[in-house]
Length: 485
Image (cartoon, rainbow, N blue to C red; front, side):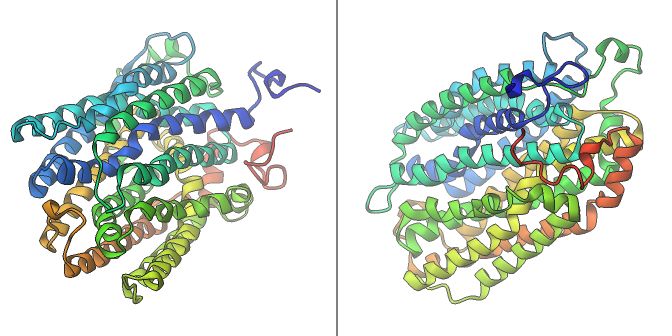
């Protein structure tokens, strides 16, 4: 019996299979070895390093604006790059970014508590900018390359699902393990440990990236020499195409809503567990519940998409998330075991809604890149994904900045650390629920109203682009995540 590596398609390339999905998922594991630590930035720099919360909110917004601008610049450079690479230009950029990320994440957590105030500000801004540069170099081409691994919409769902799996594994390492390591028995932060943890995670991320690069096969080929005869790449036209691309805008608005709410709630949630439930060390286990839905839907997502469509499935899921956070806002969540149990129930309900989105969200962007070609006659993977990433990054800056400002307005005092007043702790409980509800509502609008590639439209687009194959038919491929024979 032949192995998966020896199975070749009509073009002499390895047939799409489980190795492609695992390899692509490993790439997001590598990304999240750095990215998942961002959730600890605010607490580290306000509680451990002593930066004023309002100043911290301003610095966060400043570096995140640069972060956002950085993405379309890198994306445009990649799209305009006509050099011949040994395998693929996207993989070449990922390799460069992975080198820098080995140490760049740790630069965001230099534990110099005795430094002058201005030096602390410079350490944060400088460390973040260096980290962001390498993260962008790796992440933008990583997101773009999905559309080149396969043209089959159902196989793309498989890649999207396994990207979420890679993200989940990377995130869980910080969600579950990090709180156990950085909080003491009195719920106080031991920030000096984060620097070493970040270095270890950087090395693990580098290994994951190398596995992904080695095992990725590019099946949607582009002829670089032929492209040299085409009009010179125009960044302004590409941006205009993106803004007229409803599929790309809808697939971007959803994570924008997610990040504004999730990061807006991140500070309040950490304080809620520190000062309201008085058990910061279990916060990671509770956050982990958000991935329950991914595990539940992962074996069936191919069947769900084949029968109902991607847009239809994620819209229903977003509606379930809205319900979960309405309940979190109105239920009597008290600072005891009963209240904590209700909080957990709401998180589990949301997990059922968000699980579908976790499985297919990245494939929505791959389809949006096809939509760009369908509507405007040009493929601009790098720019399309980079602009998608631009707005995601902007939301990642606006979310924690607004959340920190709101928490401060509601009485949060970083100098008190875990010893917040009972009223402030209660305020943080409601701020958490409100921010997460806002997030779910924006996602519902993005998927249900803005994103326009329903099942019928997607099928027509793929047919017109010549991507339709027998493997897309519901009767022949019901599950993109089934084991490949």
